[in-house]
Amino acid sequence: MLELKNPHSVLAALENRPEDVVEIRLSPGISRGAWMTVANLADKHNIPVVQSRSVKQGGRRSPKNPNIEGRRTATAIGKVKPKPSLPPEQLFSQVQGNSKSLWLALDSVQDPHNVGAILRTAAFFGVSGIVLTKDRSAPMNSTVYDVASGGAEYVPFTLQTNLVQTLKIAKSAGLWVLGTSEHAEEDVSEIDKDRAWLLVLGNEEKGLRSLTLKNCDYTCKFSPRGEVKSLNVSVAAGVMMSEFS
Amino acid sequence: MVHSKRRIRKKQQKLLGNHQKCWIWGRNVVQETLQVGVWDVLELVLSQSLPTDICSMVTQLADERSVPVKVETNEALSQLCGSADHQGLIAKMPPFPYADVDEILERPTAVSMFLVLDRIQDPFNFGAILRSAEVLGVDAVFVGQKNQSAVTSLVVRSSAGAVNHLPIAQVASLSDLAQRLKSSGIQLVGTSLDTEAELFQADFTKPTALLIGNEGSGIDDGLLQMCDSLVKIPQVGRTESLNAAVASGIVLYEVARQRQSK
View 1 (cartoon, each protein chain N blue to C red):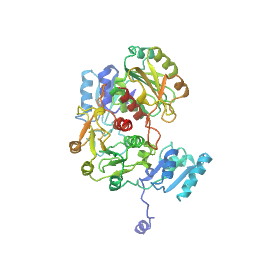
View 2: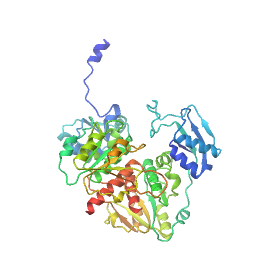
View 3: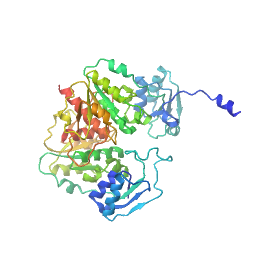
View 4: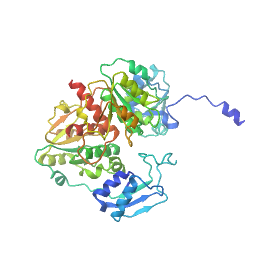
């Protein structure tokens, strides 16, 4: 069971699959803001809203300014069932010929903050679907949902052990697979954007696995200029999505 | 007797933070900080299990800069820096040496590209923004003093060491700075959700300072009024906003793209 602390991620779950929202717990101080919207909507769906006295606080100290928006102190919790993974065949059944659309695959991205941020960005840019790896990867936990700030609810995803197999299914459904790699020759600006692309992004340190790379139709890179070699993977993902949108 | 005890307490050196927070960790970050040398290292602690080639390399670097070196167990390192992913290298740091505003503004650059951060509170966002700024060729970053994440060990970590290569200056008033930038012919561009102007229509080939706002409330109204133009990232999907670090990355990439193709 997920315990979500970001009201926006709970709200998105309520809007998309209210049947999976089990309970909302509020501490007495909450009387306005996003959590109140959550409570009202939950009420409409007959989901229990519990006033609890002792919702766990993040740290030992009490928050200095509990009313400032954007401070994420756990004054409330939404208990939500995890969203089930779709079978890849069903995910890719939405591919429509080779008309422009964008899909993502993450090859062993390990930091839940990165996965969450990528889901949030994917929802912003209307990405059609995401493939996530199971092993040596961030689990789809509460942190991912909270950082995604609703993104996990809007973008369909599939959790897979065998990425190469999934890429093959994607290709036969009509997608072009584009890997990102520092060693690629072509820059992202040279890629034809008007296709149905599946972008594959790699692990924070190691990038794409060699078997994954072998199964890409194309590879591309960014042209960085600084001393630090590369962008953070969630930022790189954002730049790619923006380029392809 | 209690009084005299207090008085003889050793005079303490100023540190980056209290307790565990004065340490930076990780192989690349520590090695780079030593190598670049803009931020003095007070002490270096190596793990016993550090490979010998890396060990001799950093010890030599430390010697050149007369930094004391200690060897401890892996567990001792984790305890000192409060993190297990130190990769056998940690360094004790004094407060971060912020750059001087005048020096930055007087330095001749081809076409200036500055980043102005208005109350970025999350250290991971701050670090990721610095990393993108460095990779995408920003000349310097300006931050305010109030409600702004300082350059802490977490920021250093998530910046992947970019703090060593990118001048970061702290100013008392962001609006005074904005005024000063504008009067020296630098366009001030803000990112906002309430504008029709899309990112790709903006002209970033002119000297530019890009303004990024707080994670929750965006750019301060006073600063927003001072902007020469506003841009937004074209949206296709449903969530209404992007993470501050991702948004900065996308805009900075567009800046770099326009300047490269010019």
